Length: 257
Image (tube, helix red, strand yellow):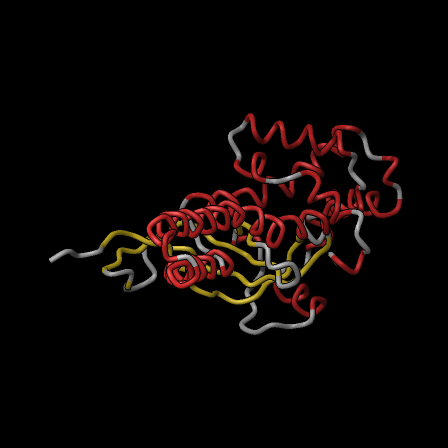
């Protein structure tokens, strides 16, 4: 008997806190979770597992970030308006993050005052934040909705295609079978290869456009950042298409707000 076992990450909700979101570029409400590594049998785990760390997920942009619980005065058990949540969980947020908040004020009101190093760091940051999500997506082969539908379409094509040919042109029936099999496989492969770009355009590009918009980055700056990421072996540097990002950046604000 084959038994599936191993270890998996287990997430346990701790509550809600206020903190700064580098994607939204403002203080925001976060859901705080404990991350543990627990043994599983057939993917069913028992208990919280050995502590790996903590994660906070912005309730506005849904981006997960690493968290340090000792940062917070307390953890709220229920969601609350940001001012109340900040007063309860991170009352000294404005003081503790004064430098970053001042930097964001310059981004909004005086972007020309940013130095080249500051711009580079601010442009690079969201790519690094989103990089783990991209790495996870491309670590294994995954099927999205269109790829799954292409499998169904390929099966229909391989079954009905030869049958139709046998009725219309009986002499070509033997040739039709391998032809329709090849067409079905080509359809599936094409959709699977396209799935990666669909993921990037759906899950990554809108988030990048939202956070990079206030900086109005040039193509040269984005190209330089992606080259740096490719050199460091980040998948996001290879999978992201600059044209897709700039199309989103140049879209109306409401498209990625």
